Amino acid sequence: TYRLGYHGRTHLRPMDTIGFAGGTTLDVGLDLEALLVLTGYGRKDGHHLVGVQIQDMKRADYVLNGRPIFPDAPTTQAQLTTYEAIVQYTTAGEVVDVRFAPESQAIYRNLIQMFLAELHWTNDGDESEWSVEERTGHGVAETNYVVNRAPTNVVNLSRERVEYTRLNAMDISTLPNPLSSTGDTRLTFTPKEGLSQLMATEHLMARDEKGVKIVGIEAQMTMVRIESTRTTVDPTQLQTRLNASERVRPGQVSTSESAKRRALEQQAGGLTIE
Image (cartoon, rainbow, N blue to C red; front, side, top):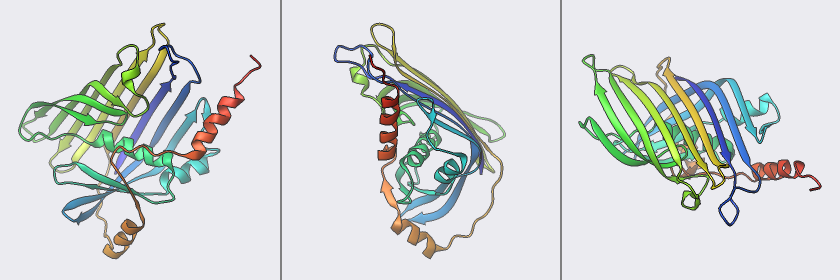
């Protein structure tokens, strides 16, 4: 069980046909304080199964263009803490798929996918430095790793995202100016606890030829391990859940018709006679 803190803002403004910002701006913000519970469910078909669930939310401010996405706190609680995703991954740590309850909403699914991307790290054996192109919570980026193994067997892993090659929210090949990005993550591992702490920050920015911001993404995430407990798993019950779940690819973005409709309503609400 980890104490989780997340602060993120995403600003997107579509461009017109000649490369200048125009149209309706999309601003999404999330401030979340909760517990993130990871539960080991053993192995199936040679892969590990791990449950991922948000619990005990202390704060959850989720806004779209300045307005709450959910109508009230109980709805927010129900949408984000009711479900547990089950992740299947290889012995090398690569996620094979993510399984969600069919009734879980797109907002919840995308949030879990983002957390999973931040939790994923590429392991290159005994090397002290390496580079790789890998999936992130916002797309795909060229990433540098540096590992420091302390005499106490504590391992500190640094991850730097150098350059994005793909964004989930926009085709960056159409941007008139390069996308600037800085991303730094520190992961700490101990012999007893495994991953004990994660601290990550990320900033992405792109402007059009007039200097107007087209893309602005900032995110800060912290995870601190607070306890470990043993759980008894009923294999039959687990199999029933797996059979009823929907399997999606790692990083796959889910869409919600209600969210699209809400964005259109907010857009219409801001129209003037001009």
